[in-house]
Length: 353
Image 1 (tube, helix red, strand yellow):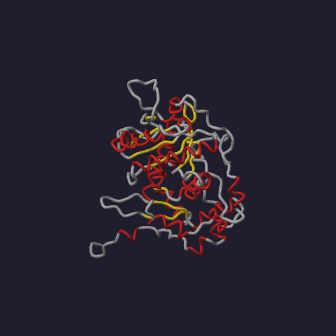
Image 2 (cartoon, rainbow, N blue to C red):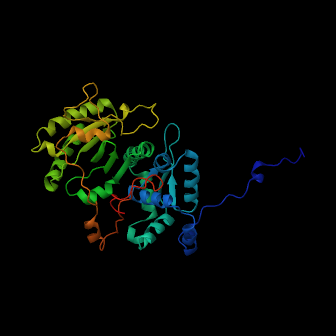
Image 3 (spheres, rainbow, N blue to C red):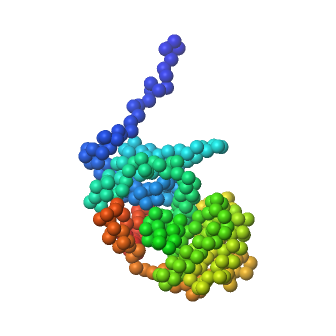
């Protein structure tokens, strides 16, 4: 009747609550997750463990067909404590939800490798600390770079065949240089491996250029010439960075050992269906390009700009040093395959599987 108005919330079904921390670590909860987690879910947990934080938009680009399916699945993983989340403050509008590995998700990863959670070096408070880290924007930016490549690969049948985090790069090359990421991109034009230097505009151009000295030492010690890609926020900053890079690059003893290319984010077409760093936005420092009208290269074509560059090695990119040190430090999981299980079945050349 009009005098007894029914409230909308009275018509709703009971919403499932978030699993308590104690229940999330119980045997019963782990048994329940065995029936709920899909291969894509476990891949997602591995990616969060490797890269610390990924936004909902990045996870959608990497593994989900739509924003709705992304929200639904991430909500379920959050309620099961497989993932945790936070939303940074933003002056205008609202930031996307940011996801990190949760306690139950860490237990699943550890169990898959026959380990205890403590052997992974995982602590929930440390995982959530990225929310207040001064490098959060930089970490998210690197994630944007690679997840947009993954989305392009899913659409055009190309692949990101390797994506190492800064922490993994530091364990491999930290005594000489610490790249923001290491990646491999496979397209119809071939496969390119590269180190990524992601610039947010906070460093001086001279400091950016001096990074070439460290990469030159790495190339000299390994005998491997690996391209270094500098991703900058604007074309104006790219022009200044290229001047500083070219000046220092010319003074290297072996300039061919450090191939360099630059690109700017504002060169991407915002109206494109799937804009990504795979587009023709890359400009080598010095190259005789076959495209006189457009010196910019697509990512897959960059290898053609350096004729003397050998193809990427086909051997497994393993971490023997980590396994030797695992007795004294946290065990390091192998690098996860960057493409989700549902997106690719070409696994023969994957390092770490």
